[in-house]
Length: 389
Image 1 (cartoon, rainbow, N blue to C red):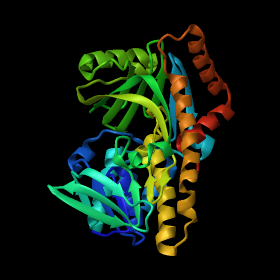
Image 2: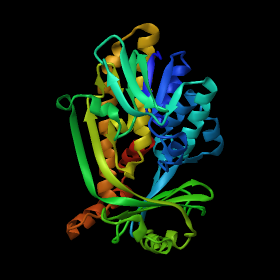
Image 3: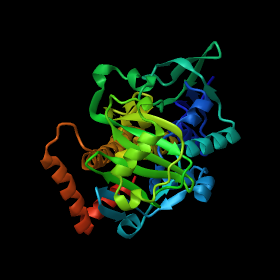
């Protein structure tokens, strides 16, 4: 099989890249190791930066998001009962959109199906070759048969555990990592959100987040030790702990119910450089991981795809190589800024084992500074709604 761009990974990054390229008449093939059902079952991010909202609209997949998504003009940060509202609209003139990553993925699948894009789910033993040649190959096993795709470029959108990043020789990669000593226990429930905006809550008992997917579907998180298992937390235990971590006036409005999904996600910051190796380009979680505190995972992937799609379109339609040559540097510049913000938010809102009383006072002082300084609130808001591409 021949194509112009072979895309490894059928999550939102790979599908969005394929959609943007296809709309410009560029042929793609999407290769995904999991089934489509599994991809659509993943419970992931729900906050979309305004730049990513506009990118999805430009890709022709924004209609359902605009109809069902919930624009958010702000969020609340708290330390016990001290609360600070960050007014995105007033401070930046922009907002974010609450719309689940699973829904974005479903919209992209529908659009790609309508275009007839070749997709191979359940692909295994993926091997990328000839990255320094005029044409590269991606070979894989699908339905018991070995298949090979010949292409001009390969996009590695296959996540942290995928083959794409590992294809770059280890001695040619620089990897930067910070593993945090706790995880987030997340619960999804068919209950109304406790607040009409996200609440990031720090307390003497640890961090909590009150989020949502829509008016009757809520997503809540608790900071927990990495030694905890989902089985350690009954629904009753989760709701009881959440109430103690949220500000008391917000906790009083909490509606509880049976969980429909419960999982624990470890937190880490990770970046691999460079993002290009010959004809291979990394994007999304294949290149970087951020802690979810700053709501940047999906959004960083979208900015990668913005830069990469432009670069590939310029090369394949106009034979202009400047974009592909600059892709790694352009994307990494924005990635590291988002890393800083996510790290800053993580340090602001979480308790660390063994910390002294001074650390807790610094967190509270940081929040009081946000309360008193419009400049500080604007800086946080600018990063939260998304830095320009």
